[in-house]
Structure formats: structure tokens, C-alpha cells
Length: 184
Image (cartoon, rainbow, N blue to C red):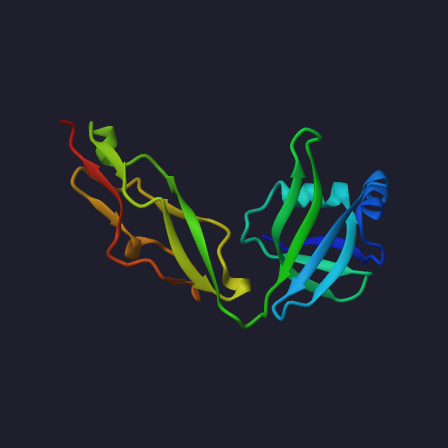
């Protein structure tokens, strides 16, 4: 997947009034924090942000192009969302060090129907999420387990996950994710 790009401008105004004026112009106030805690106030196009924001996960690395100059790789760390207006009011970005390993939790998703379920068994999910560690560019967006080959009595463990090189699983490798049990 190509890296997503959001164009941003440095903003000099702060406060409620300035934020309301930006939103009225279709701009979104935002802040980018780096790994050292330094913050940069930004404004971004609301439509452009929403296209990206609605199609990503919390571990999707985005390229923030500030004032048309060099791009900063960042994660969308937080958003302030107005439910009644159905719009994002503010966004926080985090630019990690490129070589620093980050830790993230992933809810597991499953593909395929286990062979054991087709034979009348039940699929029991034991662990809803796992923890992984990787540098930002190697961080997966999702963790998916293919359970289609599991028969009755089989167990899918953390060590059976197929993850990219450079991704370390911190969850116990022998922990059971899914098992197929016979019908009672």
C-alpha cells in the first residue's frame, strides 16, 4: 500500500476563535508532536484529512507534508470528534523516531471458515488481542489469522501467526488464540 499523504500548513493563531475561523474555511486545526515532545501547530484541509482518516488504522503511518517542504512520517494519535455535527474538530499527530521501536496492541481478525466448523465443531476465541513491537515503517496495520485449515481439536497459537520481518510479538508465543472444539 502506498503511503498516504496529508498536506499541512504551519498555523500561528491559537484559541477557540481562531479554531472556529479555520473550521469555517474548511480547515482543521491540528498539532504534530515529535518523539522529544516538541509540538508544531498545523492546519490541514478537512476533506483531505477525512478521506485519509476514515480509511486507516491507528498504526498506519502517514506522510505529513508541511508547507510543501519535507514530509514527516506520523501516526494520527488522537482526534476530537463532534458526534452531533459528525465532523472532526481537531487532530493530534505523533512523529516517532524512525529507528525507535514502538509497541502496539492489535485486535485479531480472522479469515476463512475452519474445516472443523464445517464438520459441526465450534470455534472458540481465547485471546482478543496481541502486543507487537516494531519500528514505525515495519509496524503492521492489522493482524490477521487464517483459520481455514483448523480441524476439530486443533489450536491456533500466537507462534502460528505470519507477520512481516522486523515485527516482534511480545505476547507469549504459546498462548492460544483459537481452538476448534467438537459439538456437545
